[in-house]
Image 1: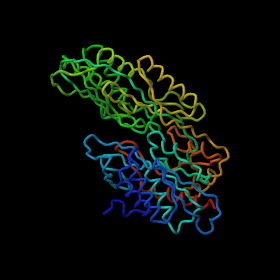
Image 2: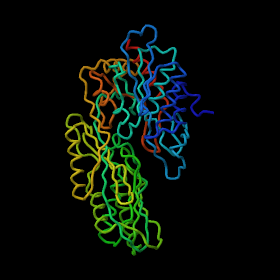
Image 3: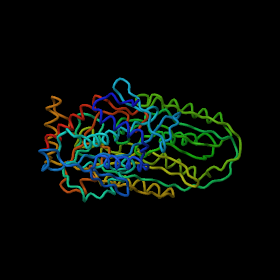
Length: 480
């Protein structure tokens, strides 16, 4: 029996559960894209599926709305795939195992993908309906949003007639988003050389961190496991003779990494353990309010011959980890509490003869984004590395004369009894890309309450989904 079968609105949660049963991590979107195409075929709806796996599904307006201005309902098909260390799910092949507890939906040991599966589910429920009043609809479902908005960037928007766009990719009910930061993925490649080294192999691990979305939670002061590993290796090099084999941590550049590990070779196990214990206490004290389960572990002890980084390579890797910028770089002077510029080293890995460090760089000021990329590039030049940029997307600028925002504010006040919060967000949204491609686009983003997105603790509030669905229906009814 389906876990969500008894919850209203039934169609929204039915589609959401079906989506959760289909692997749809970023870069693996063909199955979910084909699912949407089958849905369109089954309902006799016109659709477009492009080579990137983006899907657009069209539906005429209901009686009385045939001549109304078309409305775009927009969300993304991909999800961030994070899991607990002991979780055996294969995100390439397996669906999620949903849980419903006290009106809260989560997944067993993994991210839920409410970001942005609930938008897809609402879009499909609207398209499948026969009794919901609405203008002509263009439901636009993009791919690979979580790895640089690649789908939206590649999408041919010429078939779209809508200039009113309701983006359903927000995680805070009651907040209407009207502006967001631009961003780019910056991947640093640092070449390394190796030499044969004998000694005892130890695996250092920084773990137990809270993690989170690098745009939404970057202002929470949560620790970045890769940055802490850099500090640990740097401190270790001051007192212990060791060679570095590899470093790794994090899975997505837009998720604050919860774990990071390093393999080292040493003859002084006791000294390594002493430094690990010391800085385990230091880090725990520094981040006791944000990462209460943080720990450092030193394990192993196998003697042998290993191909480790030579001294120069080790020093350059540590210099990069310690000196590359991270976290908040500047707060907005115009909007209180808004992060203006930040970056997050979400992926750290060692592949043969190079160490790779991948960043999500964000700013609502284009020149600051460029300056931050320049800083990264300059340091990598000095260290003998390179930087690749991918998925550069523009900021979404505030529109002073928004008809859609006015309608959504009116409907919100009627349904909730108070005004919504109209805000900007530091996280990237696809609205900026669409605004750049569709001159005159009037766009607002909203969504139900979700917590801890991009982490295995991600959860979604059923009652909030219900209210948000009612709200979306009220907005569509008003747009006659």
